[in-house]
Each structure stands twice: as C-alpha cells, then as structure tokens.
Amino acid sequence: MATSYLDNFYARLGIPRDASQDEVQRAYRRAARQFHPDTNKHTGANELFLLVQEAFDTLQDPPRRREYDATLPEDIEAPPALMVNALYSRPQITPDEPGQVIYVLLDLKPSASEEERRRKPPLNVALVLDTSTSMAGARLGQVVKAASQFVSTLSEHDVLSVITFNDRAQVVVPAQPGLDIQRLISRLSTLQTGGGTEIYHGLKAGLVEVQRHLRATAISHIVLITDGRTYGDEEACLELAGQAAQQGIPISAIGIGDEWNEEFIDQLVAKAGGSSLYAHKSAEIHTLLENRLHTLSLSYANNVKLSYENGAMSKLNYVFRLSPDLGPVSLQQPIFLGNVPQNDSLSVLLEFELDSRGAHEGLLTLAEGRLSLDVPTRPVPSNSARFQLTRQISEIVQPEAPPNTLITAIGKLSLYRMQERARHDLENGDPEAAAKRMRMLATRLLSQGERSLARTVLLAADDLKESEALGAKEGKQIKYGTRALIDETDGRGKRGSR
Image (cartoon, rainbow, N blue to C red; front, top):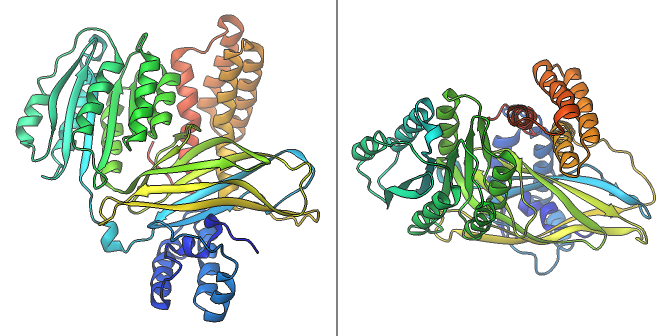
C-alpha cells in the first residue's frame, strides 16, 4: 500500500514520524477535543474526526504502527506544525476514461497545544487607503473609524503603516513599532480627499513600508481600501502583487460602492494570496475592515503555499479557499493559500480533471510537491513537507457517497462558478450564452429560497439582451452574493465572516 503525505497518519495528528507513544496520545487528545462531534457541531467535523481516529487506532498500537511504517517511503518527512487532512469526492478512478473530475478538500489546522495557539504573533500591516475625491464624507469617515479602532488594539511589538493615495501616494504613518496610539489616531482624523485614483502608487508605497520590518516571526499583510477604478497601471499592480506574494506579503482589498473593478481586484488579491470584500454601503466599511484586521491578529501560521506538479494524467483546474477568507486562489506557481487561524482551519477546495486512458490498476497521482508555511511564534518559524495527492485506479467500482462536507462545499461553490462562467461568456462575445447561464443560476437560487438574489440575477439576464454587459452594481451583487452563500456553510456548516 502506497501512502502519500496528505493521506499520512502522522500528518493527520500533526506529529513527526518518530513521535513517542505519549506524543501520539497527546496529539490524539488535542485532535479529539477539536473535532469530536459531541463538542464540534460543524458539518465536516465528524468526517475529520473519523480520519483522526483511524490514524490514532493504528499509531497507538506498536505492531500495527510498525506494519504501517513499512508502507511509507524511506524519505518521508515530518509534517509541519499542522494537522492536515484530505477529503476526496471519489474513492477511486475509473481506467480508460477521459474528462473525469475529482475534488479534494484540504483542511489545515494547528497541531499545537492551546497555550501555543494563543500566543499572538506581532503584526506588520500596511493600510493603503484611497483618498480620491469620491471617498469624501461617510466613506472616509467609516475607514477612519475602523482604522482608529484597530490602532487602539495594537501592542508595542506590532508594526503599522498608513498610506493614502489618489493620483499620488503619501506615507502618512511610516512603519514602526512602539507607536504613539493617540497621536496616530489624531493623525488619521486629519485625512483629506482629492484627486483621482491610481492604485499602483499606493500599493508600491505600502509594500515598501511592510518590507522595512519583514520577518518570518511576524504576520505581514497589506490591506487596500478603494472605491474607484485605476487606469493604465493594472499590469504593474498585478506584477507588484506577485512580488509581494513571493515575499510572504498577502494583499487583501475592500471595494466600496459600485465603481471599482471587481475583476481586477479579484485577480490582484488572488495572485497575492489575499481576499476581497464588497462594501455596498458606507456603513459596512467599518465592520468589514474590523473583521479583516481581527482575523489577521488571530493567525497561527502564514505564508502557506503549495509548490506542485500535476500528475501525468491529471490537471489542477481550479482552487477556491473556503475559510478563513473566501475567494478564488491563483493557480500561478507556487499557490498561495493564505493564513491558518489559531482556532479554526484553512480549508481549500481543489478541482482536478483526469484523463485515465491507458492507465492500469494501481495508484494515480493527482499532484505532488511541497507544502510550506511559517509559524511566527515558533523558534524556527519556517516549516515544509513533501506532499502527494493520489487515488486508486480500479476496474471494480465500489459505490461510496462523497463526504457531506464536500457535497455542501461543491454545491454552494457551483452557484458562484455559474456566474463566473457567465462572465467568461461575455468576455468571449457571447451574451446569449451568458444570459442563459444567468437564468439557470436564478432558477437554482429560487429553489434554495434566495429570492432577492434570484431577482437580481434575472434582471441582469434581461439586461444582457440590451446592453450585452453586466451593470457595475448588479455584477457585484451577484458575484459577492453567490460567494456569501458559500460563506454561510463554509464547507463545514458554520456561519463565517462576510
């Protein structure tokens, strides 16, 4: 029996291969407390607990453990400081069949003790704030309110910088620890608006400030807030996002109102390993920014990434992060997955397309490579391990229902994917196909009781007959509305942040 890293019993418990029996027991007790269905009511907890239980039943029994160890490759490495579980939508692959699709849900959760998980790593955050003319009034007021509240929670070890931009950038608060909180809040209250919107200037200045205190022992992040479209510098912004990701500096964004370009912003944050949020009304800005910054402050591990190669008969088509922050993930190598929260999971859904023509019974590799991350609170922050995703090829079909967790995640994600495909139809000059997809989406939404969103989708489908384009407001409502539906059951049955 061949065993891949993400099917590895040691990875499920978050322990090294040479762990003692006492370490096996302690790891199991930690995992049981986190996943046992008596205490964890999330939809996917029971399935994850069964995986943990299977690993413990083998590793706590010395003869069974020796037999299991004999199946592992000689060079298998100790896992990083995580419990890693993989749920597959299919138990096996059918030979000689093209176009098969299989989903894999990766769930990464801290393996550390509660005491270690509660240690708060220092932050190194740049707030990049749009202060163009359109941000005047309530919008800027809500941003200042949320930023001031965040500032008041900083410790002496945290680093914050504030950059404003319109058609040029200004470093309002240079990156430095030990900030004078009251002085900083006073400085925020004096921000003024004016000029146009050129995002690149703001991002570049923000990246420079974060780089000044960049280290593996801190959580680094850039948070962009804008209500407008940037013109002519999109490619430069995307190139900068790639540079930031390579340095372990994700970029997240909050778009305000209807005029900003959500397609571009989604590309930007996906490439940098961050997430995007939509504030339809000014009153939502404060809550969204507060939640984003609070999530960062509760990170256990950051700079989580996969460097991979597809198997000979498989191709990774799509990656979507289910928690802690929703959003599509760029397939550009390496894949930046985001942060692992202290008391929750980093959950990511991967879609593979397979062509098993010419394959014989045995093991089919979906992808293999390395999983790496930083745990800022550990003496040696950087961790990495080899990984491999595999499925058995078999002529004999053994019917097995996919895990409930996957059924829920895939079902919710399919709604979001329908509006994505409609957008692609429009890009390819086929508004008729886009309108058809929108009507199908509306029908699905109605069947789930989402009447308001279904109405918006139907109106957008009708408008496509006339304008052959999605309206700015309707497009955002549909994209972030269907994304929010995933959030309601973020792959494990719990209500998440927006």
